[in-house]
Amino acid sequence: MKLYYYPGACSLAPHIVAREAGIAVTLEKVDLANRTTETGANFASINPKGYVPALGLQDGSVLTEASAIIQYLADNQANTDLAPAHGTMERYRLLEWLGFISTEIHKGFGPLWNPSTPDAVKAATKERLATRFALLDEALGKQPFLTGDKFTIADAYLFTVVNWTNFHGIDISSFPNLQAFQARVASRPAVQQALEAEGLTKKAA
Image 1: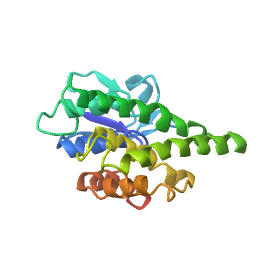
Image 2: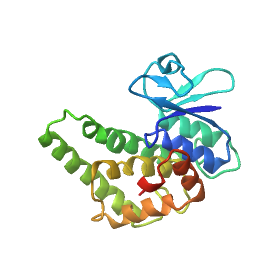
Image 3: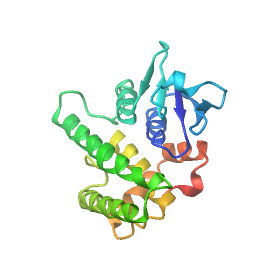
Image 4: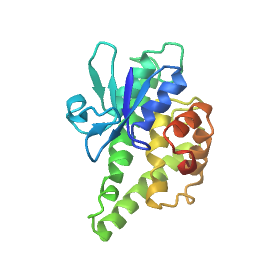
């Protein structure tokens, strides 16, 4: 399998999951500005949506969207605890967190990436994110990971998007449980390997 990625983008989540699951993937960096890959391929022909991640599968097809890819990777490696079994309440709790991360945290950062976003909008965006961080901080004050004592794909996704606070100068020290979670996940060997491979070690939370 081949993972099309951009350093530090949401593609870091499936990169982490692949390493946690022991799944060998080939990495191919994407120049998002020019829509080309490091081998010179036209990324639009790989993923017409134009953004990472994209996972090239062995049958030649391509799977997109971070939340779908991380579930696919976890479900295709049976001997891991990265995702509960389908049909269980634990799986629905995982999906609940994935939905929250995707819509409220991941997309919540959207205006901050656009240099033309007015300062007032950026300030409002950060305030809204803070309310979401407070919810996460409360949850993580009860257990080390989002769904309990075990690291799952939801934790890989959350770590990835909360790590964007480093790129935008957002201080999360007022959310000590979330800050501790970031440090806890960052210390995992597989996460360190993924960060190093993407050249992000010094930028990690």
